[in-house]
Amino acid sequence: MFKPIPYLFLLLFSNSILGQISTLKVPISETYSSNGKFKLKSISFDDEFPNLKGESTVTFTKQYESFGVKKSFYKINRSFDLYDGYPFFAAISKDGRKIIYIKDKVYYNGDEHKNVTFYIDGQLKKTYTTEEFINCNKDTEKCDMFYDNRYQIFETNSSTLKKYKKGITEKDKFLNKNFVFNKNDTIYVIDSRKKITLFNLNKGEIIKSKIDFDSIYPSIKRYEVVRSNIDYYDYPYKYIINIENSKTNEKLSESISKISNLKFVSTSDSTFYKYNLFRINLTGYLDRTGKFEIETFEVDEKFNKEEIKNYLLNTNFNTDFIPRQVDKIYLENFFGGYRNHNDSIAKIDTKLAKEKRRQEFENRKNLDSINGIYIPRNLKESIIHLDTKLNFESRKKIKEAKSIWEFNSHISPLGMWIRNNWGINGGSRLLKYFNERGFKNRDDISAIIIQQYQKWLIEEKDVWSKWEKQNPKK
Image (tube, rainbow, N blue to C red; front, side, top):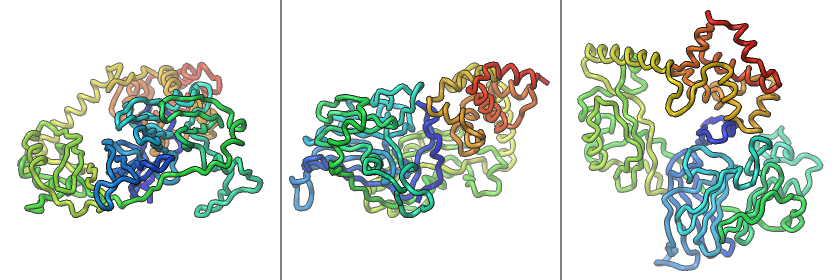
């Protein structure tokens, strides 16, 4: 069902963009107001969640525009992604005007991507981070939005059937099932500290936070929680290069080839890595009428951007692959690139591009920041800056880990973040610092940083000076 995406350390960085959850089954959810008068229907248009790529509608449940068609109230140009078994929550008020959406992780920057978003009449009015909403200090305590006891209450020897361990109480079961719910327009959120935050859905404000769960459990233990209904459709996985002109059945990759007088080279082509390829970054939505809506469009200078753009906007594309449950689908992954049809000219372009990359790599070694991110000068600065990026729970996990492999593997966000953001992969003064000490392998460099940081957390505060003495410049 799911494409494998790492989950263990999605919260390593409090404000970083990390791996999303990707799925073959795309959710369509229905959430009802507590009085049953309004329905919030949310549809996602892509295979990753949670994000904004979709749409949501609020309708009356007992008023009709025509036979069988519920009367529409308003529409919001985003989805409120929900998925069975994942801690995402949406609620709509009794008057249908207010919506709150709560999730435990943040994957993008921007207000609408925050942990808590609150809307009135489809307009964003308030946002909160987890720390703000539950009144928690991430530097001194574990600040997770929702309480999670699944590993404590279920047997681990069965992958298909959930079986409670012996001695599990009704209170434990309640916490597992009802860590967030709507009770007559009051939202109850039970966080990782087993503290409750109450939010007034009508007034759009926090009533109280850090309420001890045990003190309030007797008054809520018999409450019957009404959950959202979630259905799914199969994502079609149509790559954007393969959408076809409805008149000619020509694929987009072929049409751009003709427009640009360049040869398209797919990722499966034997020469894909032989020549420098000119690239296109294109994402957007294809609706059922065959019209394409551009979201992202970037091209190398070799292309005539306006000519390609005009083609995209004025062409009708085949839509037979769009699932019947949705009116549009999100498309991305412009796999492949373009080169000159003449091999000799393509070789010259490749040589020029290689020299340009080499020069850019060298230039990066003198920069104190790259893409707006400060680049540490040495191991000492790496440790200090890493410590400011990590929250309390992440520091605790690293400090207590018996091996750093789980933090530095190719599926670990921490190692990848260090290599990508501090120029270990693309060149930087930090890479130069390690190269001068004989370290060339990029995975080894990020491993050194994490390993020495772990020692620093265990109170070896001069760890960088010891390491530099053991690894002087060559």
